[in-house]
Length: 297
Length: 296
Image 1 (cartoon, rainbow over the protein chains, first blue to last red):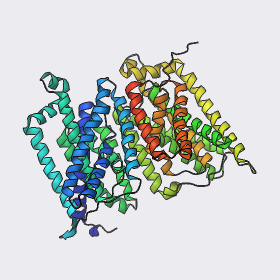
Image 2: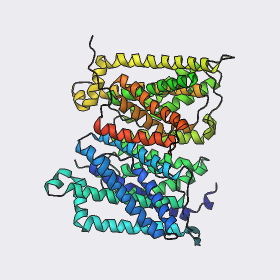
Image 3: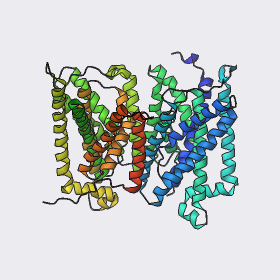
């Protein structure tokens, strides 16, 4: 493959889009991971759930993609709250080890995924909406891609305002930083946790809609991203939302640029999941607290 | 009808081995292995490749055990020191990675099509189907019995006591002067070898292997068997396999007589998921509790 023929700008754009979807998918997982101290494996199913929620919305009210995104956000957020209240809250109340919470999340994820299979069937679906494609200079974009990048930029900005300027956001950061100290200061952990599950799952739902719009809607749509999402979480050091956003874009860009390498080596592009896995292993072995975390000595 | 019963028994024994192998890792040593299907897969592929090259099945079985033990050893030496939740994530991801590699590299084992026409362990001519099943059943029960007795000796020995101590408090065990790293890698290697043996049997029994047989849902099925039966009890592992396979076969039979509005495969996994949460919530020790050690 000739290096000169590669459209680097296009790959950069693709990386940004992948990164945006990853950021939406990973943020909720990192929030619940840092607050409840276990990797919620059923988080992947929230993406699929969001994608199907948007699908139903588009079936009922056609051609209104914004409404579909909102529906996906709210419904998946509610699913997140429900999951917390039904499964994870009773478990943490019983004081089970984080190991058991992980196993329970695995079972719960299985339940969610196969319920979706049962309701919508095995065939991949597509949204009944047409995303226009056009050229800007040397790169080809679709209206969906512009929407993805704009939405995630707005969400990053809103999230920043929320975390830094509002009292609830500050309480949230305090909780993930030092739970006992925050609770002594009178922060209501339960209220914050409900909000965290709502926002986290809701964002994953939006991520699922974007991913589904970019590819197709299948029940394993979230599961396919799982390796990359875990790589992001661990690269970002779990606790800090800002480093999660940064590492989402890093992984997104690396995966897309690795396609060049893979095509030069004549390998399948499915291997980009393995690239994410290698990053995951290297980070765990060399910098287990994440790329951006400074360890106080 | 006899064929159906024999087939069911074979699958129960097969999953009992897998469930037992998780029991030594998770139930006794406390290692979170979410990549069980990986070692199952390695055993199946290695054995299939060996027997397709014209060697006897039992050589294939030996190779499968050794090879999956080797991979388990390498993985645990390099990774077992990390935090347990990270280890769970790594094993889960590694399973998917190996599957992607096997699916895309045609030269290893046929890519997505997999390997077909794997010779059976009993290449006798004019064999009736029932006799074939009976021989297979004897073979798998032999393998199961071997591992069962092996684990029974291990867990009732001072060695087993150290494994349990690691599960309860690793730091404390270290302060008692035990090299916990060594014990954990050994337990993981034993578990991997057992899963490899199960995979080897599977490949010769059904006659083909493909990557679709070893999705991470397979791992989850093994986990639920282990948890329902009782992770820290070797009889429990078998009870769990019996229970879950019973549900699976039961829904299949039920489908022939009553029309249920739900696909049996989906139903199986939905039930599995719900049971997993319920058991972790109300009965994390499973149906059979951990026994006291038999000291002779």
